[in-house]
Image (cartoon, rainbow, N blue to C red):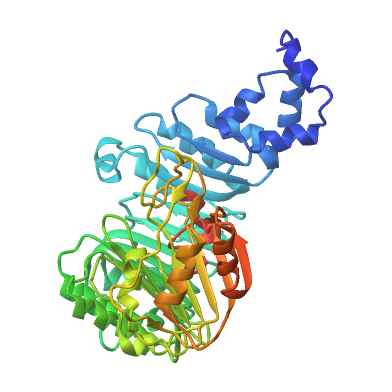
Length: 496
């Protein structure tokens, strides 16, 4: 390293704080490479274990690598992710066990599918179960992937006082259940979910306030005399993701029961198995409305080749319900629309469907401009967006409308970068406001653009657009279409 005089000389004038700021933005493998460039870089990097070496990912591919990473972390709290290999897992688990006293987050999974791992990697489950029996006084987050075995009782010998977030996948439970009272965030993923498993996790994690369930098949989760609040009395947030089952009738029945919980502050339903008939979906949306006291906000979303549809309602108390599913042709239910004050439409082609609908209390309308139309040879760096014209000579009746937001979406999955910022012509905005919207107010309070550049080649058209509202604003685009509800799991999704 001492022969690399060029690298050493060019960095001698840089303070260690600046070097560390650069190193912190590098992936782990590049940080290790940086320690072999010169002694100055190495000394600076090794002197900051909390900043650079507290996150450890081990796949067991290199002998001694995990031990070296653990030593480099020193005495700081670490986030440890283990991907158990087909061979050499005993050494990995043993090395991790020696440092459990300083682990803040622990995640493990198998390098091959867990079902086949249980047959091909003899003994690895026993090693992992042994790891889960060791005391961990500093552990806060636990992710167990593909165990296909029972959790030890008690978990971590009952010595995990700081554990607050647990994520379990394909895990079973043995009796007697030993309570882990510190856990408030709980995730459980399994191919099948029945009342027995649900009662098991409820018996172990009695203080759960946020619950996320992901399963493909279920067997009578709830009875008429049992509710989620009976099992989890402190529950405030519930997210259910249902995939894979063909029994859409029974699935819909379960979702009806979940949505009727009026005392849970936030409920999200993500389903791919509901009946595609409009009346079934609208009945579920009606259940959303009934579950809330006074619905105030409805979000309509339909995106992608699979036509995923999302509906969210929020009431005056801040209680929210979201339903996300596969397609139906109509989500516009008059009893729902008559209450809402905020409407978000995330598909341009859906706007004409609102024509002729009366929205008496609507004060904010957001239109997401997701779909590009074309590029021209002369203007390849710009993306032109077209607002739709009404399909009939009738406007959206929104007499109290005060705010109109027109927004693109920065997302590689939905609106990829075409080499420039999307553009919108001012005359098209004027036509949309004057022809598609009927309001009793002479001017909008606010006309805002998010991630859009307004073409200015005709000054009089720009001036006409500016006269539509008292205040015209420009903002960056939002980053995620379905980031429409604050989730208590957002801070802890590092292992997803």
